[in-house]
Length: 68
Image 1 (tube, rainbow, N blue to C red):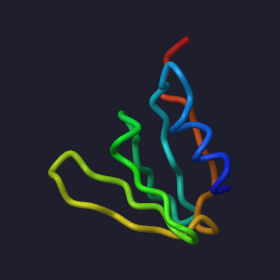
Image 2 (image 1 turned 90 degrees about the horizontal axis):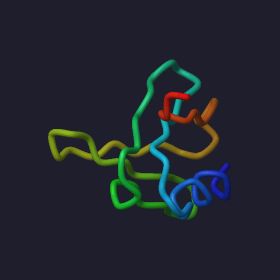
Image 3 (image 1 turned 30 degrees about the vertical axis):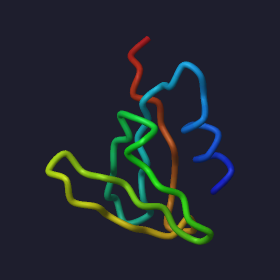
């Protein structure tokens, strides 16, 4: 899953996406600089400036936020 998140962040042009966790929580990534990838976890910045961290094995799915 780390590679999939990395590929979405590196995509040119960047397309915003949503990370859904297995517990039902979801986090939108609207800019590639709003995420930091570590070896076993990812940090996502929230709109209020706070950060959330979760392990890759907690990710259930990755979804595009683009409307087609």
